[in-house]
Image (cartoon, rainbow, N blue to C red):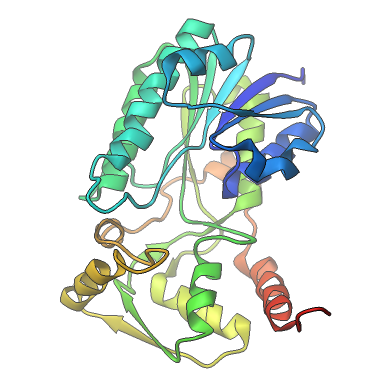
Length: 309
């Protein structure tokens, strides 16, 4: 495989940090575009990785940094918009994708690999609706594209098990909206591997890959399982939809926004893959129990470690 020059948008986030590490092992030269490179200097020490301050929403800026690249990877995505800013999803998913496609055309970059989400374009949530609109733009473009649709992604510092772990440490009872919603959690390392293989193999061009792990689990079971892995006894209280929606309304005003109304709407659809995208790429999905118990145990030990020790 010939090493390539790759520009990554959203490469300093949860998935991006794993993907950049994976891509540089293949010998690729990687440019990460970010709003503040000083916050991510640890990535800059990796071989052939360059971090650049850039406003990725500006066409001219994007085209300039894409010049000479073989491929672009778009990992940008938000799960919540700011209160009173209903257009945040559209800006992050749709308008940025539109600008990126135009910038690739100007810079003559032929290849685009796009992060999306399972059930994109379905349901009533702004998150899924705008993910679907972004996909439509990519499909209609002249670029050699590949789209990935993962279920919820798990791993070290994720927004699933680790988020619930932080709540379970302080809450003896945890009320859960739409506890019956089903997910197929996929390991972040498997997602990074899928992107790396798509870059390496032209047969992935023009394909949409749904990415899920080996298990389909309900949200309430995820919370109970997290508590067991932490060695804690906690009561999970499934809420009827009326109370769950009230919880989402309140959650929008809490620090960290643990749940929002748009999250609540997204939970109305199961996030389970209808096709084995990992298998199609020759990847064996990583089980939850192969990763999360050790990660949560390590986190518990770190939090209990006395200061100064």
